[in-house]
Image 1 (tube, rainbow, N blue to C red):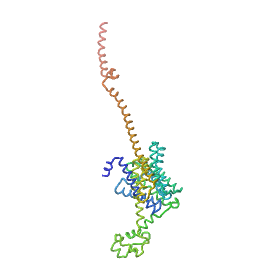
Image 2: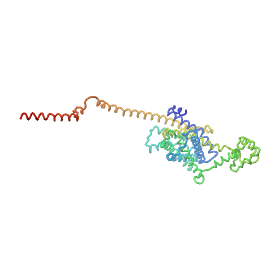
Image 3: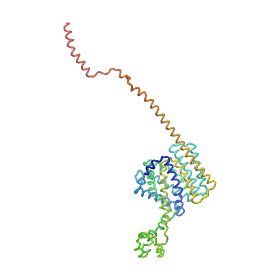
Image 4: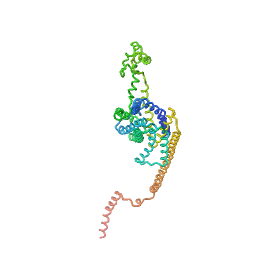
Length: 440
């Protein structure tokens, strides 16, 4: 049924709908979750490891239970195509998290607003694609608009600036490489499978980054997963009776009659257990599900955001993707203002207007150029067909019943007629000889 609904929607409208949902998901779901994670569990690598692993986990569960098209593609060809994309995704996200923590939103977004420029430069140098002056002007308007919209208290240091540039270039490479990888593996019509494959590989790579985060990368670290497990440990012990992190067994928490009346896995154990748990001093910390919830939500939000990202990038050109990303960043800035109560200065407001105007100008100019190219192509096709029609008319005349030069020549004698003539000559020769003898 869903396939019929999707097929009924024109491709252009479907592309626009995916881009819109991607922008809204980023602004009102991922943005809030990422802010909570960075503020409460400050670890750039753990943040992205949670996003990659959570997304891969959702893809595997859904792919092997409900939706086969989401299942990761573990083949040598798929690994060869998507491993570089996974590396770029790790660099892009980890560097972005470090840059936000080091130099703030203003400097990071100012640098990343130049992504369309780098994308155009790559397409021109390596793909030979040329752009009109109107397109370039619209891109520059959007870039300057994002920089002004994010303007605020500028924090500058070489460490954060380096990571911001790494994230900028990695995201430029991502928009190009992910599309090429899907085309190489035939997943253009199933981009979510390419996303699942990328996330599975990225989770493995990010695990390696997490293990060397402190003593090799020198990044600020926080015990994210031990904190989340510590918060859940009392509940796990209460429900299952398993000794989690040295908190003791269930029999050490409750009197024997409570265990017999409710059962080790009964919900009543969890509901009434805190009185006994605190009375006997079984737990050093209270039950706190918030860290684990933030980790789980980071994976879910990234699955929504970048699943739509892969679906959108498969449908558009790299430059169109870059300009949509500009609009998405403006939406994120607006969402931050609404959710966290930020106030805009006149400079911020002018930047938002300029950025949206540049994105709109790009959309209109790009649509006009596509219409113009389509009309020129149709005219060129018509010109190539007309000479073919004229060239077929002589062929029709040649098939007319008028005699050809070959038909004027006398047909060769058949072998039967020749032999008959020879036979007549032989039969006539005795008569001729007899007449000659009579004359003599």
